[in-house]
Length: 369
Ligand SMILES: Cc1cc2nc3c(=O)[nH]c(=O)nc-3n(C[C@H](O)[C@H](O)[C@H](O)COP(=O)(O)OP(=O)(O)OC[C@H]3O[C@@H](n4cnc5c(N)ncnc54)[C@H](O)[C@@H]3O)c2cc1C
Image (cartoon, rainbow, N blue to C red; front, top):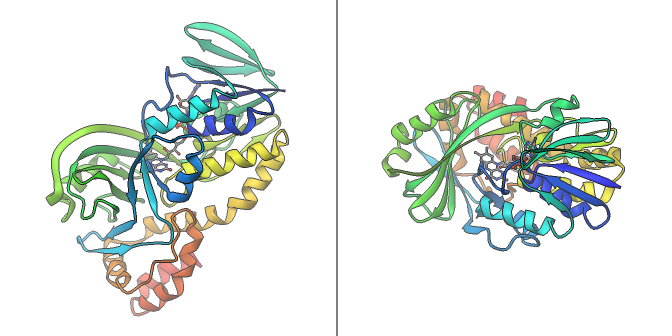
């Protein structure tokens, strides 16, 4: 049985790693290497990191113990949840994953998937046209997936993002900083992820104008602007596809960003890709089963994650200021960055604390309950 995987990002390589021992797998990647261009902050949970260490040992950059949640007025609350985080270097992770995948799959680099006729794919490989027969086609070709559009899979919502690597003084080099407020993002948030004591990845995900919001963050945020030291080491732009859609049809399936497999409330994709690849490996060649099992495991998390995402568009700056004030008395130790449903564990306390702010209370309860 021949499987053609389009895309050698983490989703494509993880799919190959889970399928390559049992089936004939070929991966085609349009670039000359995996991990190019980098479009990731590299923050994953320690659990996700441990699972990826089976395949990648050199991508570690920093340990993260929690997050500072900043309101627009510059105040912040410390959130240290159940699960810790790890910052990784995506360029290294992607290369290592693909190298492992190449032990069980054939890899064609500089090979662009153009389209299919029947079960034959047209590929431009090193400037030559090639035809590749397949029994199953897997679209792991990212947020702007050619496979998804060619086969009419429904599309996730696309949130643009920009990120710089820059000299910055984090409040704590093992804490992520999250910045909320309409100046810094439209409908999402901005962040700083420390790589070491004086360097951080600073980024914005926003429904509109992420670059302008990033500029505001760096120049006007009451806390960030004082600690930003002015020099950019790297600038990336990317897209976060949000909203789980169809993932399988006939002999074709999607995995990773092509299928909107990211946490709707953070944009983090790697943990979901890891889970999807394992389920795909266990279910293949029954793609309906892949779809069913993935949805069974993840539907609740998507549903709650999407409700949190919706709140980002509903809460005003003064709501965020209020949330940070009451947040100082909340125990966040049960929160789990990979499982948005864990927010339900703190919801009763939160609702009690904001009861005297009827507007905010209605927004939170109406959306999360
Ligand atoms: C700014 C930003 C920050 C992020 N931060 C985090 C984070 O901290 N933690 C986290 O978990 N996630 C994060 N994410 C999300 C994460 O980066 C993605 O979920 C992940 O990269 C998606 O992997 P993928 O393999 O599905 O797609 P991609 O990484 O996009 O890989 C797709 C591959 O397919 C190839 N391809 C595309 N079309 C073709 C074609 N026609 N033929 C051949 N090859 C093709 C591309 O060249 C690419 O190599 C972030 C995303 C952004 C934009």
